[in-house]
Amino acid sequence: MEKGNKTDIKDDVRLESRTSYKSPPQFLNKKEYVHVNMSKLPHWHQDCKMQFVTFRLADSLPQVKLHELSTFKEHWLSEHPQPWSKKEQEDYDKEIRDKCDRWIDEGYGSCILKDADIREIVEEALLHYDGIRYEVYAYVIMPNHVHILLSPIIGYTITEVIGKLKGYTARVINKKLGRNGSVWQKDIFDRLVRDANNYAQYLDYIRNNPYHLPSTDYTLSVGASAF
Image (tube, rainbow, N blue to C red; front, side, top):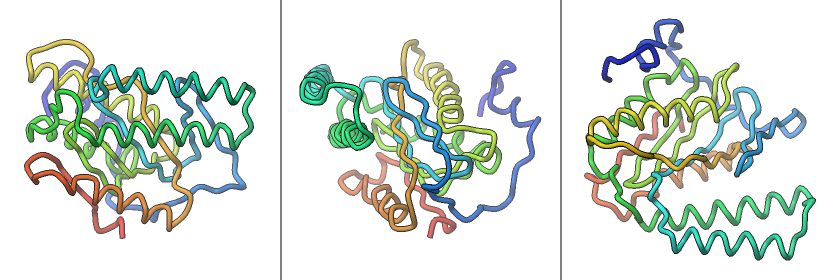
């Protein structure tokens, strides 16, 4: 990590104490309140519950795919006028996530995360707050996107911790590459993990996501605490 101004990730950590163990995963409790923060995409939160998070590089979807996504949204809205039922909202969100997941796996854009040094910036920043703001159970850093299984520690939300991670890594990556501009797509995809079976599915997804890539093009970690 680089030294920097008072927003540097190392400066912040002096105010907090790191835990030395992983808590057992906690899954969605359907009887508890779920806070939903609406932006372009809904973001779900229950204190300390595990979430599967995806964020991608700003250029990971070409204009033709963005146009296809826009067309799909217009078509969906024409057939499902708002206000939506809970099921309609869930179906819509799933369609959007599945399309984007499939497209980013096709490897569009500059794919700067193929560079091991760039991936290391992301990995070190992610692990720096492991046990402080969240607990990380597994992750894969792909050429143009990142998947993480983690549980925010009480007092933190997924949008807050991932927002800080993206902001910090964007500054360091741009400095390393000698450039300006957006590194990450603004929004994130996040999903509360429902139960142990759902957890196993996400672990398998992370493990298998880079199956088609040489080992030099990705970083994969599934810790012992994830089993």
